[in-house]
Amino acid sequence: MRMRFARMLAAGLAASAAAMAWAQAPAPNFASSNTSPQGVRSMASACAMCHGSEGRAAPNSTVAALAGRPKDEIVQSMAQFKSGQRPATIMHQIAKGYSDAEIAALAAYFSALPR
Ligand code: HEC
Image (tube, rainbow, N blue to C red; front, side):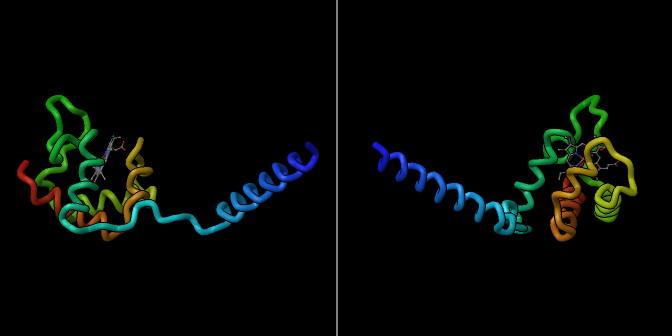
């Protein structure tokens, strides 16, 4: 009985040591950059719930449409959201989740879509 308890204790300690080692490891890269055409479409789908499907805002939506907007304008807005220069309710958080390369790819994608 005592032996079994000791073995369980040892197993528990080993597991928590492993958990601690994992916690100290560098953060895993959950969202690696993917600017292939499919990658960009899948990134853009994350914008659709607010900016409308294919960047076309739903009727009466207060959120701006992205389709057909000049690429530079989208890149600039995203950079300003990211730096906090442009006040926002949500986009300052969202913009931080994308690299400059991803933002450029998203901007090119939306600017090429018909309004
Ligand atoms: C949860 C809703 C939501 C999601 C998801 C979202 N946006 Fe936004 N977006 C907003 C809101 C709201 C604004 C107005 C600024 C603010 O209050 O954050 C905005 C503003 C913008 C603007 C500036 C538009 C203008 O002309 O004023 C751009 C560009 C933009 N978003 C791009 C994106 C892109 C690209 C994605 C996907 C990566 C995205 N947004 C995802 C809600 C969202």
